[in-house]
Image (cartoon, rainbow, N blue to C red):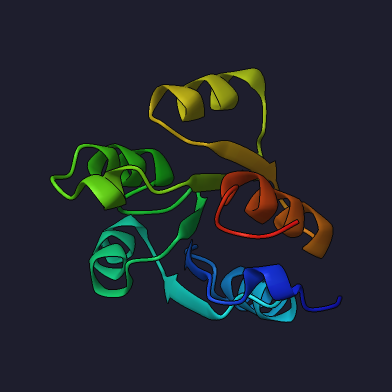
Length: 136
């Protein structure tokens, strides 16, 4: 995995309840050259982290308790901060079936990645969702 200079200055928030998965994602994102990677262990902590860190993109697990990814995204999209409400959100899930995709789109997800994520799928998601923010 090589660092991508186009991700210099980019901030990503990882909202994931499994500590090991969160650690792996943080390492992959750092290895891709993402300047700042913030973490939250559930949707509620994710909302607080958005306010505290003002990320450029959010990677969010769907299956979390007590506030799952769908509830997190609905709360984010309905918030008063327009920049935060418009942030690109990429859902990550073990179950990427049609029902899950339909619900993800309905609540405002920008993309959905099947777990486990790889450096290549993360790089592609970042490039696609940060168009105009990154080069290349």
